[in-house]
Amino acid sequence: MIRQLMSYLIKHIDSFLMSCLFFTLLIGLFVLYSASGQNVDRIASQFANIIIATGAMWIAANIPPQHLQRAALPLYAFGMILLIGVYFFGEISHGARRWLHLGIVRIQPSELMKIAVPMLLAWYFAKREGTIQFSDHVVGAILLAIPVLLIMKQPDLGTSLLIGASGFYVLFFAGLSWRLLIGGAVLIGASTPILWSLLHDYQRKRIEILFDPYQDPLGSGYHTIQATIALGSGGLAGKGWLNGTQAQLDFLPERTTDFIFAVFGEEFGLLGNCLLLLLFTLIIARGLVISAQAQNTFCRLLAGSITLAFFTYIFVNIGMVSGILPVVGVPLPLISYGGTSLVTLMLGFGILMSIHTHKKLVTT
Image 1 (tube, helix red, strand yellow):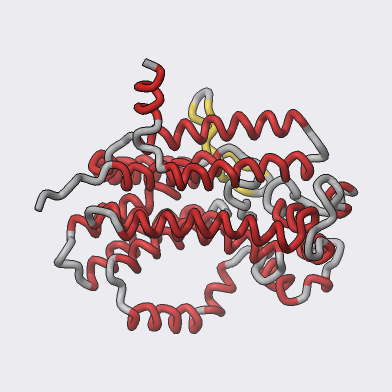
Image 2: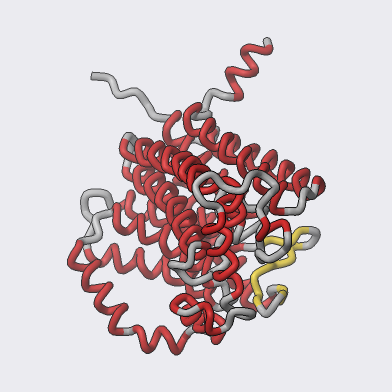
């Protein structure tokens, strides 16, 4: 009886991917304990987040991909309604309007769109398999641009860029030509003055600080300066768990969320960073293998987008912590403290597992 129950519970769980996720989440708890000043309540809260996120992953893993495909359009439409609701009725906090109250619960609709946007685009291009034309990519770009622009208006530049990247990967895997990519890059370059004028003052400041953080060492450049000091002082093997001075002496800001990688790098050094990057690489590689083995266009596009979006989260976070990208408020996936982003991530991995374990055998 117990064996049958366990077999049912893990039937649609990819063991290799789950193992990598488990070890990465475990590392995250250890780093968070140090980054939070050995705050047991914070660890208990994050552990509860992991349990909830793992449950969401299990549910997604047990939903067949064809059901996900049918849900793509309603989910996108629902997410758009919530984003419009945020635009008109959202709660303002720290100068941003990102949250929406729905009776007894408060939600951040932009997190839902991290899944809804690539699902819709994968559904759209799967419907046009074999007949995809330039006009289809234009329609796909419009479907992507609408939520991205709404999220930028909140303003939430980090999330809008991540959703834009996840949608772009679907367009790319759907056959977007290199000529269009190069032309788009040239157009974006030529439009830089216009795009610069559309940015908020604090967003412009972040880009300026990227090139010279010491122009405002106690203000906008403080995060970057302290993070690079922490990473550099870690050396080869690090200062040891709970012994990082930048975090323990409160020099490092946002050390449990956006800048937790600096805490990890200071305490575990280059060797620890390599181990963490290896785990991330194994997760990404597994996702790409699942994408390559997917049985239809919808699954291939969705799995590829989810995997490369995960890579983008990692690249952006580590890039901003190490000072090669502007600070945009993107947490390190599976490591940083937080519930909403973790649930979204694990939902994505659950979808990957569903795509892999629900493959139908083809008779020959």
